[in-house]
Image (tube, rainbow, N blue to C red; front, top):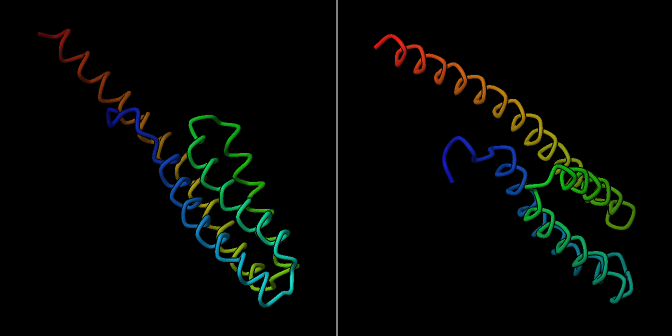
Length: 129
């Protein structure tokens, strides 16, 4: 993959989801031992969200996957109703996700403009020779 086609947005968002997967996976034993959630429910919710993070991180080549990423952020915050600390952790990850999405888009726009200017300059030099 060339430097021009590598997506900083995808890389940053995938990193956030990968780290969030660890956090959400670790909520499973907390839900069981601290929040007294049924084992089956805790496994489905905690490990399900963990797997969802990893799957969506791999699907970020498609624009619709970023929408799924936002849904995961909402679910992580909503998990705070079961494990109150997840209100804080979910909000932190949502902030990281939003920052990665926003800054990644900005970097991609600025990079495209810089490459376009560089290509135009190269074309002008080639024509003058």
